[in-house]
Length: 151
Image 1 (cartoon, rainbow, N blue to C red):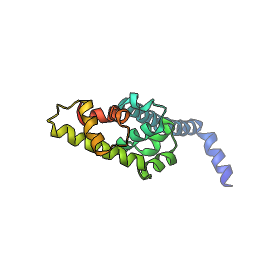
Image 2: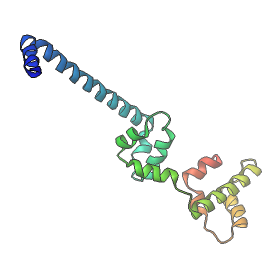
Image 3: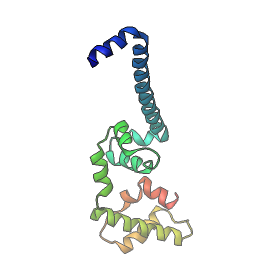
């Protein structure tokens, strides 16, 4: 009986049925449009960082903007796995990372004590004084160190 009544309603007002179908489509398209606008906003932040092949760089980007955009959406847009991001975020620093951090701190101290006038060779001399059996030049020439030391 209920089905018969519904069919009669649709027969009487086919335009109202079509209007409700269009409203549902419009709502879905608005949702899709909002998702695309968010994706564009994510890409506008720092595209040069995003296009790296190394996922760690992408993860750093996600971490930086996680307060602004949902992590789920950024992972989807940037084509990285959410579980990979959370694994990266929660991992403990390796022994090498800890050693590199200590070396960077030593170089930073030396640079600051010199009043910012030491070059790479003098920094290496000071660092080698503290860590005589390590190779440092590649590590001290990376972009992060240059930024950290103000060069």
